[in-house]
Image (cartoon, rainbow, N blue to C red; front, side, top):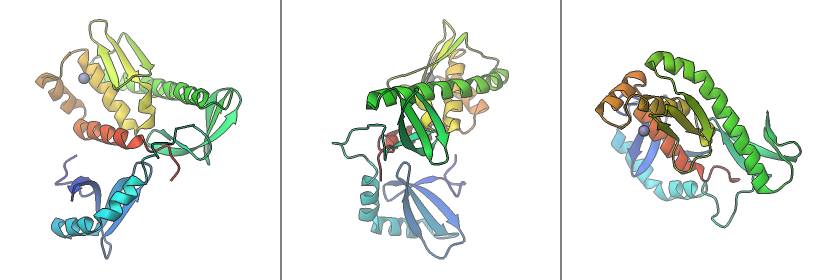
Length: 242
Ligand SMILES: [Zn+2]
C-alpha cells in the first residue's frame, strides 16, 4: 500500500498510526474503534495534512485515553468466558461459553465456545483446536492456487501452536508449518504467511531474490505483513470487554 496515493491508507499523524478517510464530510472527526483500538480520522476531501495533524494533536489526550481503554486491565486474566471476545479472521466475536462437547459454533450473537468444564484453560484449548482446523481448511484451499502460481508445494503442511512466529519452513525436508493464531487475523495475512513460507522452499533466506519473488506474487506483501504485526500488537487487548 502506498500511503501517498491511497486516500484510505494508514498514515502517521502526530505520532499515531491513523487510518485516514477522505470523503465528502463537513468537518474532521476522530474515532477510536474496536476491535483493536484503531484511530480513524475522517476529513473533508482536500483538507491539508497539516490541518488534520493539528486537530489530531489537539485531541491527543482524548485519543490516548480511548486507546488506553482497549488494553486489558493487567490484573484481569483472560477467562474465555461471558463478556469476553475472540478474534476470527479479523472479526471480533462475543464469546458465549457453554459446558458440553468441545467446539465452536458461530451464531449471529457471536461464538458459542463449548468445553467439558468451565475452566478457562479448557475453553482456551477448545478455541485453539478450532483455530487449528480453520487455518488447516483455509490453507488447503489456498495451497493449490499458490502452488500453481509459484510451482512450489510442501511435502507436508502442518498447523500448530507457535510461540513468536507465524510460520516456519524446513526447506531441506520441504515442510511448512503455520501458526494456528493466524485464524485471528484477516485472511490476507494467512495468504501472505503461506506464500512467504512456500518461497523459502526455493529461497532459504530473506535475500534479494526472495523479496523479488514475494513482490512479484503479492505486490502488497509489505503492507499485509505490517498490518499483521500491527494487529497482533493490538490484539492482546481485543478479548476484554469495553
Ligand atoms: Zn521467512
